[in-house]
Structures are given as C-alpha cells and as structure tokens.
Image 1 (cartoon, rainbow, N blue to C red):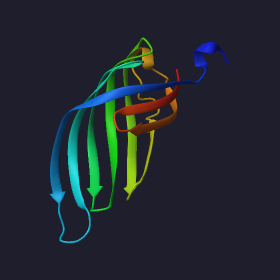
Image 2: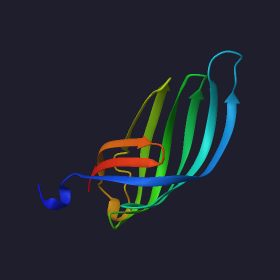
Image 3: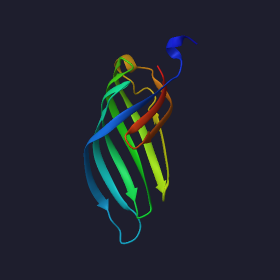
Image 4: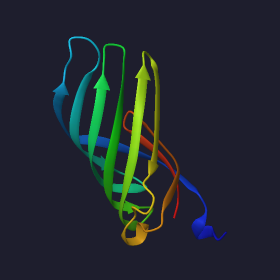
Length: 131
C-alpha cells in the first residue's frame, strides 16, 4: 500500500449556519418527528460547506437523528464533493454517533475516498478516511 492510500484521521470544527425544522408528526405520547434542512461550515483540514436533510425523533429524555449531507470544498487540499450519512442516539445523558462516507460518492479530487469512521459531537467532526 502506498502512502497516498494510508488512512488519515482529522478533527474538524464546524458551525451550523442554517437549521430549518418542520415537524411532521407530534403525537400526544411518544417522540415528535421532524425534517430539518441544514447548512454547515467546516474549517480546518476539511474546509467547505455541508448541506443536508435530517430526520429527527425527539422525546423528553431521548431521541435520535439520521442525516444525508453533501460536503463541497477541500479535504487536506483535495477539492471535490462527497456524501456523509450519519446519525446519533441519546438516552438520557448517554449519547453516541455513527456514520460513513457513502461509497462512490466522491467527486473531483475526492473520487475514490472511503471512510474508516465518522463521529460527530457538538461542533466537532472526527473523520478517519482513505483517499
């Protein structure tokens, strides 16, 4: 395996620029269901914007979300786009996230990239990838 195909890990701060939520089900009991359009700004080794659609389920002590998000910009100086699919679950104070780069979604200089792991926490993306 050559150096260009070795795994690399980055931690990238981001901010949510737009959050447009639309509740589509709010039952008397159980979690509320929403659709959200988002736009994020990433700065660092991943530099660009992400736009996506989020589905959320949220109750008083727990919830979850799933997202399909297209990134456009540069990753370690390589320009193009790719799609992240990620989600998270919260049960009281316990939270976990998961995700991946959608296979074959990379374009431009990001064609062929793959993820080893994707984790999100408040304002920070941890991405391990191969390009």
